[in-house]
Figure 1 (tube, rainbow, N blue to C red):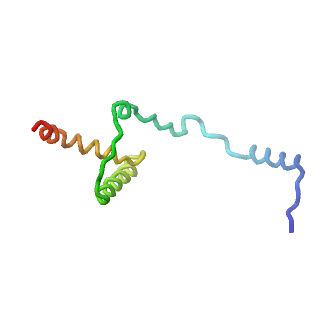
Figure 2: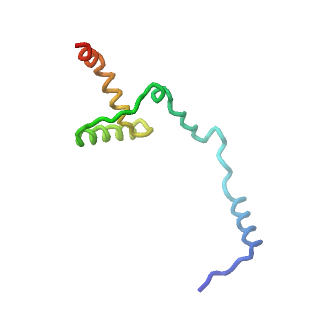
Figure 3: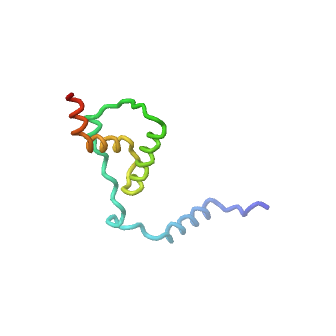
Length: 99
């Protein structure tokens, strides 16, 4: 059984009535602010490279990055975890590089 056909004028009036009955939009101050743009500092000073890791090591880094993204917000980033590890061990790495 086919539905009742509505004229274009009746359809437009029904749509206008639904729009008029809709709740008013939220004030601007109640809308969540947009996320700030990502800092270009790292990409301007950074370089892309390939790192060969064991699959289980890569999976660990990915799991940690996902957990951090869930806790802190943002996107998962294995690069951020590697940068933090380097900063934690920078003195040791620089001492080894000087040998």
